[in-house]
Image (cartoon, rainbow, N blue to C red; front, top):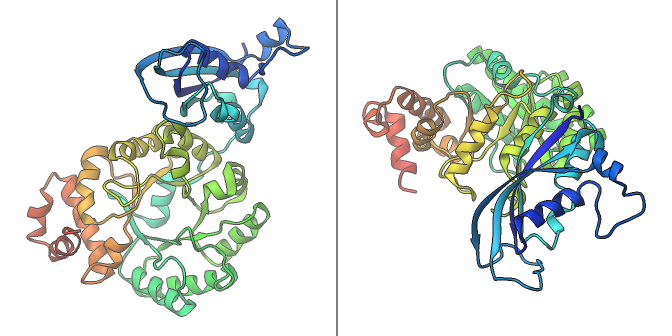
Length: 418
């Protein structure tokens, strides 16, 4: 039996949904705009994509995207529906780059479609087993930090760019002494000429080790090693040899193939940042849903994966954020789970609603201003985050809990009015 990969799309078209499904299946397998020599029945049987299911949704009277064409006799309606198409695995093999060319290739340019979004992928074992998936994930990260029964709580180096080495060392030392679990570089700051990794990594690790000598606990720092493919190993090795315990890459910059390449030799957790994600997802009828995206990121080896945050500063509905968190925690490969990373406009006051919707502590919760900007300093900011999760976990009202905990009360006073 031929292994199949199923892709589900949200589609909008001025034509019938049946016709749109045929265009999708044909364009991405054996068809083109006209019949060509060699397009035999046997070839179509062996390599053709097949329509599995069409679910009709309510039509609309205006197209979602420009550039579409309409049939000569058009009734003014644009049909919407979910279409599932299966593709023979032998068409592209167990390769994420070639899978994407198949399920998300030229479809977005088809004029017969005025909207198309990849919603989900059902991947066969023969595909998934080629990829290692995360080596550390939730349990491995918890083991390194010895943090259990609550989220991993951390922050981001701010300002995003411009810190001197002395300023960065002081910030890292102060945060580590304050008790935080985790710090990450901003995605804007990887290996710039003013602060190259060969200088930054030893400087940061010096501060981390000095703080560990004082506290007995070593903070995890995710060094942004994003760069060209041939730079990833050199950058990774610098971090590991210096005693670092985490590396970060911008997944959409290095590509999923770059992430999988890094995962082959990585000796520490890979913190996967999804910056640029908005261009894939901001239009509801274009791009890719996180449900599909996270599966590929996890297969390629992301131990941590950003999912945005509830009530944050960036565009995304709370419903989408909640679904993103839950999708990362769904079983995949039967191995390590990728840790969802909640960030973007977070502080202690965002905890209760987050926990009420996800009912799990297995997340990383990052607060930049919510920790660094706390009126009593980062130690109080960190404490306020921990206390907020404690209150949420035990079903205690956040504001009532704050009456007995000054760091929470001060956080509410500072951030609750924003």
